[in-house]
Amino acid sequence: MTKYAIYFHQQWVGDHSEEWFRSRVQPSTAVVEEMKEAGVLLFAGGLVEDMSQAFSADGTSGTMVVTDGPYTETTEHLGGLTIIEVPGVEEARKWAAKIAEGCGWPQEVREVQ
Image (cartoon, rainbow, N blue to C red):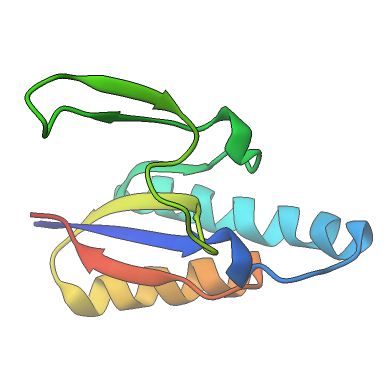
């Protein structure tokens, strides 16, 4: 069995009405329930969008430095992720497609080492 991370950047979500977002709740939670029932879900969750709550830790200088804010200034930041464990890449593709359809925005997939 192989673990895969399925994730999206917050900016991929796009600008939508509150009504549109509410319309995505049922289809996206249905996919999570389907993954649970299939026994492939290890974790799924969205991240807090307020980047002022982010902080970073860096010990590469030999001294640990913990600072407020994201590690790098970037125009994109992670919005949420799902970790699954499946027999292979084709199964990961299937679940990524279901998540993308349920949420209504793109997903990226990478194998977890």
